[in-house]
Amino acid sequence: MHDLAYVAAGYAATGAAIGGYRWRLAVRLRRARRYVATTTGRGRG
Amino acid sequence: MRRFYRLLSALGTVRAQRILGWATGIGLLVTAVTALAVVPADADQGDVQRLMYVHVPAAWVAFLSFGVVFAASVGYLRTGRIHWDRIAVSSAEIGVLFCALTIVLGSLWGRPVWGTWWTWDPRLTTTALLLLIYLGYLSLRKVADSPARRARWSAVVGVIGFIDVPIVHMSVVWWRSLHQQATVLRPGSPTIAGSMLATLLLAFLVFNLAYGYLMAVRLRVGRLEERGAIPVSAPRARRPQAAVAPAGGVSNA
Image 1: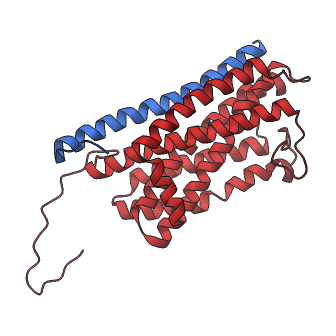
Image 2 (image 1 turned 90 degrees about the horizontal axis):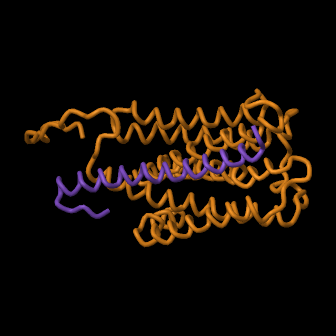
Image 3 (image 1 turned 30 degrees about the horizontal axis):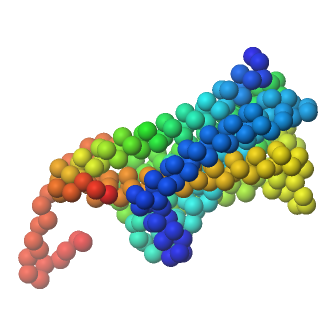
């Protein structure tokens, strides 16, 4: 494999890790907001 | 300790989150462009050395995260306040993410330079152990049956587990290692070219912002999940209505 392929894979992995975790947090945030909104009537955290 | 908590609480506001989000996104883009297109390639390793600008800051953020887990765990054990536990688990999640990323990036760097994806080198082994310790920390939280017990057990692991962080950092000094010695965090001046050092410092700054941003969002998630008492793992049985103790009776509370 060419050196640049390792570099590209590394930077892609970094972006995917940070972006993926942020996306996962967004899903959890939406779910928690929805849950709180239905149980208490207030959705903002 | 109070100032530390206030700082972390401020990160949990929507405004701080938005500012940090934009700063992190732009920062990551600028860092990637600088590291890939502006700074020159290493004379010995060539282009593959550009992985340093993400590998080293990722390792730093993992250390920082576990340092915050340690401080918050001490805070919980001293005060018993649950917000310290929330900070600790938020930071532990981010630490695990960046520790795993460090290992993946190191592996991608090691293959062309060392000729192998993985070797049982002291630095690599202690880093893998660090990842396992904090994966254990997160797993332990799913086992404990009450929030107080979960927080106490986690805090103990959060304090003891941090012992591995200085061991990881010093492993290249204490034992014979394939991994290179420290080039920036070392006694004396850094052994790295000026433009590379500047790019690396930029990457450190941006990764710290990313940590702050992810902490901000994770703290909000944690607060909301606690408010709604959303089950983290298996759905729990509904709690029975609080019994009214008879006059003169003994309460378990």
